Image (tube, rainbow, N blue to C red; front, side):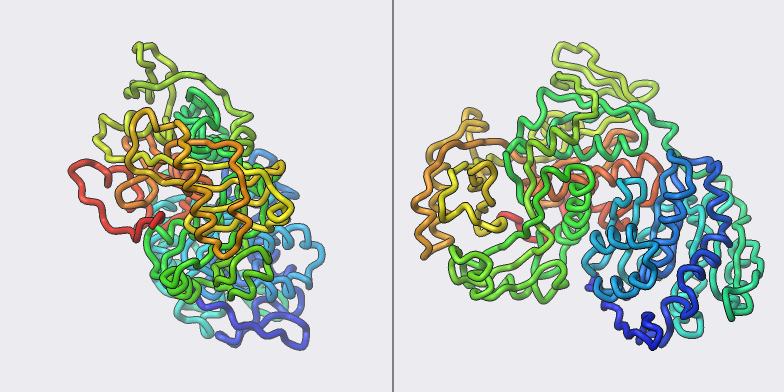
Length: 621
């Protein structure tokens, strides 16, 4: 998927935005907020339908995000009037994303929305194709922003959205200005995605729109339009369906095997759906997630690949996730990736051309040294939204509210009502409705019955004391390894990546690897001399779990038995979105990932008798 074109916006004599692509206004010159409330809220009978609502989530789908004004009006109404147990899930599609500066200028017209507008602007995604899930309002509102052509996107969204949408906001520009959107394919998707008693509202009264909606099962009525507009349409879906919207009631107890970031993210996503979560592990943050610091930034390729596509979505969600759920341990300082060879400099140039500047920028040697004078005069990629996490502390915080059973799972067996977990003495550990295996390096043993091929890779990080030279380090510095800003007067230097190792070496720190970490730093940052003065004070060794095609593993092995794994050295970037995908599937909610990529992530691809498709170069190459 190619990068979407940003909206071209001018502001008229009233200070309101106009889309030059369509020669049309984003909202009424009279009062855009009043128009949104009248057309989209009132004609969908909101907020009355929130009292009561038969499901735990109310899902609204919108065909034109634009400035986000409808979303802000909806959020304000929901957070003011909806019962506290209800969750709002908004799915909005946009072909031409606005730039943040234009959005801020548009929102300035409505100071009463400033609380929600500021949060939306702060979490607004880079203009990259696909779905961008954001948690807002303390996690009570989920926003899925899909960037790309609507009619191309809907078929990839629909498979996980059947019978889920409670209300449609048919926005977008007028049919005569934007005929490409108002097509029969849209109305058919609306019908297939409609939950019982689903409604729609739209500002237009065009006959083609009315006939298109009636043809797929909507009862369409006319109402007085807003302001000077004479009429508008609204209605209810009454097409025959035997399906009921799925809800979380069929699941109560979830077992999560593992004690690292994948397990912690899964616990958070499952608890958000109201499930009783039990963590089963020998310890918490005692494996690869137990390092003191972890860099969080996207893995991009010079040509878009499934792996890079996953990490674009995962990175945006991860930094949103940590800001919501582990703010005390998240440090949004940016990540700088040095081009220490000519080959890397060439690849970096291609990456910067392929992705939006909001995602990544190519910095000159002068910009790099302006960022921190102790860096070599090399070009670099700059990830402004990246940062680092106090890894072990964040995992412990995320798991603080989960039940922890200290045990080693040796066997997982189906039961009449779900799954049973047994230890190596065949003693029952837990009976549960569903299981998520998020055990990192323990995955090969736990999935042996399914004949999945995983590989564990040994990695060692080295801690060094900060010096007067290194203490001001302003961001994560990546090269063939990485160097973090100081935490409690220590930097983390990492990390080795060994595919071959003995059983004794699996978690044992090696002096050879300590020297390698420091030597790589000195070599890649030459001619700077300060790395040579650093002295190791401690090391930490752990195993990372990987797959043969380098893609994460996310999905079910069997009904209500899911796997999150093969996150490699990018677990803190990859895990939160993977966890959200599993929880959304089990709750019957729209997914934050298109159908083709979800299929590529399934664990069945790693069966011994399967040939893995190409996903892009090795991320460690």
